[in-house]
Amino acid sequence: MKGLRIISGDSEWVIEFDEIVGYNVDRTKFADFLASRVIKEGGVVETSNTVTDVKVLNDVALVKAGKSKYQTEIVVAADGAYSKISSKIRGRFTSRDLGITIQARIDQNKEFSNSNKNLNIIFFGKIYSPFGYGWIFPKKGKIDIGLGTLASKAKNLEKYLVNISKHYNLEINAPVRYAPVPLSGPLKNIAVTRILLAGDSAGHVSPLTGEGIKFSMIAGKMAAEAIIGYFKNRVKLKDVAKIYLGKLERSFYGRFRREKMLLKLSERRGISSSRLVYDKKIRNAIAEFYVDKTDITKKLPFIALRALKTYILG
Image 1 (spheres, rainbow, N blue to C red):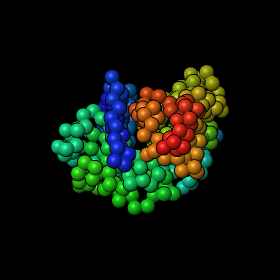
Image 2: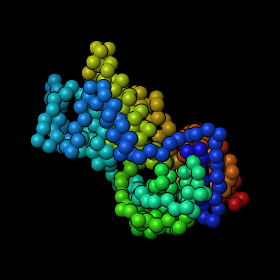
Image 3: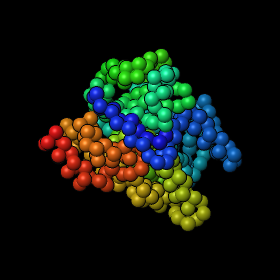
Image 4: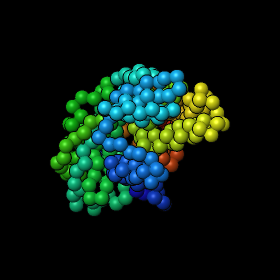
């Protein structure tokens, strides 16, 4: 991917970069690749089984998965937005903290493939999402087409999906899938003695874009670093959770905090990205943010001034 096509109403713009800024991957194949690396390093990957319970005892964590039981010193739970393990630590996400996505993987047509080389497409506006954005991500002859919104506004989402597909005369000829997306912002109650949460179960998802894979992998690495410190007798067991949270705070928690503030402000004040993208400088900043070239929350004064100009002068 070398850029974005941004669509809002009857207008659209292409923002291209000089270098490749990302790759669209098949999530299942990517998970298989990561699992193969675990096996290569001597780990064990168990499929067709689900962890149903974790109990922390004095000197061990007891993990129950189906009919099997495992003992370990520390558990890293990355079992999704509806995590059974996280409910033991921080409770479940409320509807206020969740977004909902709907997506289908469909065939490309000539109209689409001829006009979109190395571009991801983002749709802004209330015809594409009640509060959020729509997308089309090309993937080797297929495309992922979908949209995201706040759970509180998630009604008739397939109608919006059809609106996105019509832009390129695409046919939704595959099953649609719904998925929850945590939009809580940074959480601190995700780590206790012998249990660390990471990924969706810990709310490690961008409140503005819904991106999660990158932050889940960063969190997983940080959890591993904290645990290794304990195994090498550099830190005490009771300090592992604190060290993990400190690493998260120094990494992406500040960004998530600012993103959550922007999300709340947009919802309360009715600030619409579909209007802001008509300002070229804001549009370019949004494009850089969506391809992860910059942290848009660090440009808040600039964005605020440009947004004020957009809303007052039109």
